[in-house]
Amino acid sequence: MKKFGLFALVVAASSLFVANAHAVDLNGKKGIGYTETINNVNGFNFQFGTGNLILEGILGLTMGSSKDADAMGRMLTLGLGGHFQALRAEAAAWTIGARINVGNAVGETPKGGDAPDGATEFGLSIPTRVYWFPNKHISLHVETGIDIQFPPKEGAVTSNAAVPEGSTFAIFDFGTGVGMSFWW
Image (cartoon, rainbow, N blue to C red; front, side):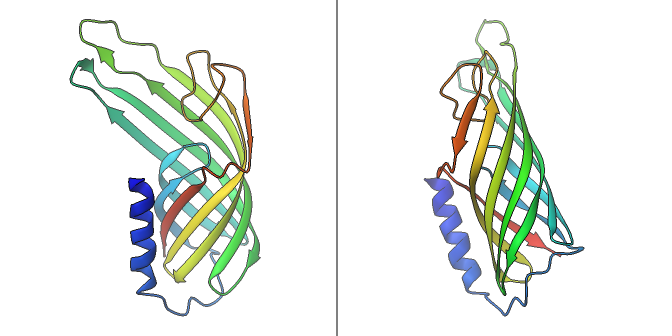
């Protein structure tokens, strides 16, 4: 809920600076921001526009520890993919893409216990994304799409997998991904 509140605040604040964004043309532009994807790979996003294609890399790190732990748990996520701008308008774009996702996690070490084994999860997403450009340097987006994850036997790392191992398949999961980027 905190993320939704923060996202709503950013949308409201950025609308104060709405200017004529001209036609959305990201060819040769670079973007950096935050993305949360449909399968919970989230972190800094790095984007580069080339023609009608947006190349994207996502890198995230989450660490945490309870007071009863000897060592922190951590999760490292990585997403690499591209988004094709199928439709472009004056201040918006609709894309469809493909992304490979990898997540690696190690749980926290309980006091006096052994360090847990790590787990790595792989996945493939076919996201569809709507970008809104309140001005020519800022984009906000939401995404949904098709997501296939292959959680390890230790359990899901990035996905909300219902199975401990095997595969999960989600179509247009409206748990939705959101993000914001600054372009130059």
